[in-house]
Image 1: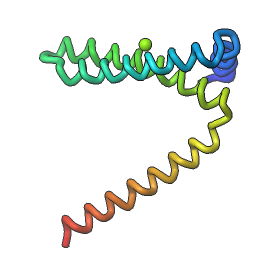
Image 2: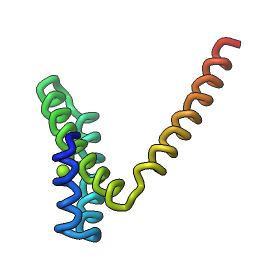
Image 3: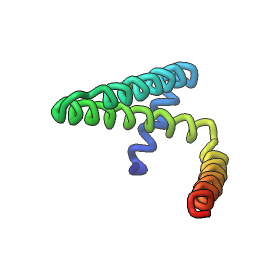
Image 4: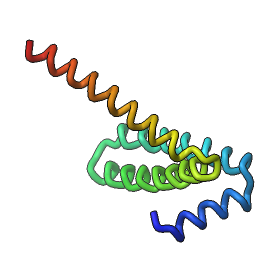
Length: 103
Ligand SMILES: [Mg+2]
């Protein structure tokens, strides 16, 4: 994301307000859930292409809202820390699974 795009997203938060933008974020979460479900239900290649294209659009919407939440509530560093902790935990789970399969 460019610096100019980040500024626009911060301005949207300031202009529409926290409560309104949090409601939009909730809506975008639901739209991503629905879009994933439609990808799973796609029955042919054309439908698959269209549903994945729609999913991309909804992920972009949600990422824009998540950026606004992180930036405007000052959560970027704590989220980065938690992301690293969760990936490390996943690494242990995968190593344990691999060890059980090979023993
Ligand atoms: Mg959307």
